Image (cartoon, one colour):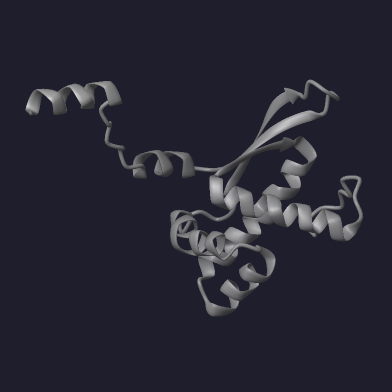
Length: 143
């Protein structure tokens, strides 16, 4: 464990929670959570990205042992790790968002640095379909 934060949970529950959050971060690129959890997830995600940069069978097996979803590991090794080949650490950023409405807990957003721009550039434009009304009118006029 990178930090000594207990997060109000027993060890097994805390480890499973953090593993799930790291997996979700790898899949989606950002998470909104409490500030202390975000700091823990940030350090664990940095370690996973460092494993991805090695790109060996042993590092892939270590990542599979940590992250429960195989698709997330594939994405880590094929898409995310090559983006950070030149960077030495600091793969994630934690931004404070302010207090949560219900209990006042300090909220934060954790993002993969530089991944948002690549994700936005890589999106394919979807084809716009005609509304149903216009499609019926065009079919009627064609007959």
